[in-house]
Length: 345
Image 1 (cartoon, helix red, strand yellow):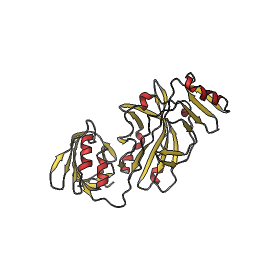
Image 2: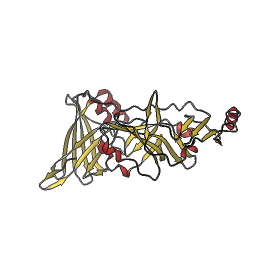
Image 3: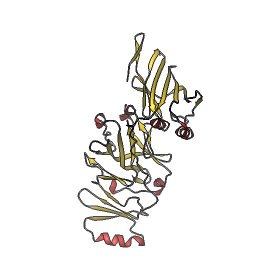
């Protein structure tokens, strides 16, 4: 971030919007202007995320006026529509940009905050470079096929079988596992699961036809996997998303600038099943950059996020979140079989 001064008066102003980071220059004490460029295939990502303005490293969230224009290379300008109470485009506007954005087009963002400071940012769309790396793709888990039982293997080799022991169709499974040593059978009415085998020390993440091997730095200190269920009223949601201070993974995310991680320790990651919000009580957090070991960290509620490694990561990199457990006041602890990823560059 640059520091700009006018007549001895200095401030720092930056606008982050997906992969784009723009330093703004003070041309008067209340007028700030910035110009930047973005490659065409990266520019389509910015319509999927909120922009964030920082002034002296503090977020500016309230605006008296907020406008975003798209100026095409022929000189025709039109104003784009934001979502209500958001710094993000509507889905219709985003779809329109994806289909029509061309090299030579420009985004023009005009803002006025509550202190009557004015900000103007111009982002010009440039040709793609050959070195651009697409974000890692996370497939959506098939939640339609359900198993009637789940076997959870602990670090010490003991296993927990979750199953509805009252169903006749499960009798053979129950009887078979009664004869297996180190297996404890737990009855869950109408139990169903998307993943019927889980292990506390599993180091492989299945991403469709591709597997990632992760290298856990620590061991999980909770036992949530032993007591979780997967109720249909949550897993049958039209969309499961992770929201992290206006960064959204559905399950993959656009590519965000690293500046989005400023002051991120003050913001928690939340799961949304459609519009219903859930707090995470545990998860596995893995750094991926394609060059070093995929270091994974088990986290539980009350601990700080493992953010220290971000300083060592080279661009681009990703943070994959899986093994998610949330808590519902009525349904108890719930396992989310979907992995999510936040991409940074």
